[in-house]
Image (cartoon, rainbow, N blue to C red; front, side, top):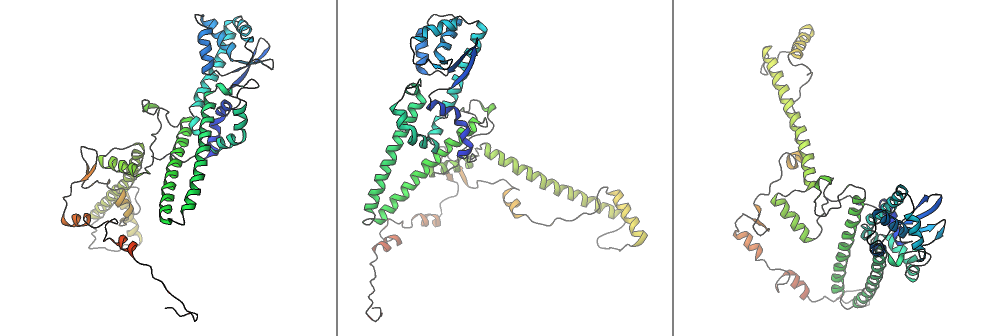
Length: 414
């Protein structure tokens, strides 16, 4: 099943927290503690490393106090993030808070941590967005030059480090592509066929790259919206709404798709299609069955009236109306029965019967083979010369000498 293609406008909302992890470098939330305005932030790996030693052997209350103190970014509008001397005082103030108040602030910090971890899983998708490249071109140099000023944590943010590294490599790739285009342009007049072949290979490589990135973008969006499980191994099948099935694009994927069909392996998309076909089949066959029952009931009613198809006597007036009333009484709810002689070729070809693999089967090695024996006609087709043979048509065309036509001053060809 191919996921419905998403657009940048659809995906823009799932990167809201991720943008903050790039600049300013963390998630923040304001809280009010005993009349004091405090802004706490999410913690990263460096903070947890320091907490490991700061809170060694501490009780649960002291541990929460250290976590909250490490997460404080602002106090009454003043940035205290880079003030290392303020940490003991902040811990002392947090440790003096009542247990309930400290637990509430600690819960806010943990919620920010969970949000930052969840948004970090969407980093790869954000790297492929044009928004990311635009942000890199506009603010990337300044972010790299000033990684940790004004109380920001850019240098300590793993999401930001990955974003910087990817964009630097992407700049290098684009520069190499530019040089490669110049080289092909210079070689074009001397080897046009070779350059044309190289261009086709480059386009295929770029299309494969764009397709893989688009699949990452689509999957990330559906996982963020809760329509797809983020478990790649399928361990939580009960939570999965539908299965992620990639559309076959490469020759290897096409061969695998063919093998799965011959082997009878079905994914969620195949089962959905089977369900739709079964519903159509039940409706058509049920309608045909009801029509047949009505025709049989009508035929029985006519026989009871002594009317046969070979002896049709026209009835008019009162006798005719009485006859119709008696027939309707024997066949209730039926005023007209028609013979359905129409033929639906699409239904008969694609829905009435499930497709069969015929002579195809999958051998022990997982390869698709045929049970049909090789006859002389098949062997003759396999023995036909290929384009690389010296006597093939392609080889004859390549060896053909060009024809030159001369035109004199009078316009006569010679």
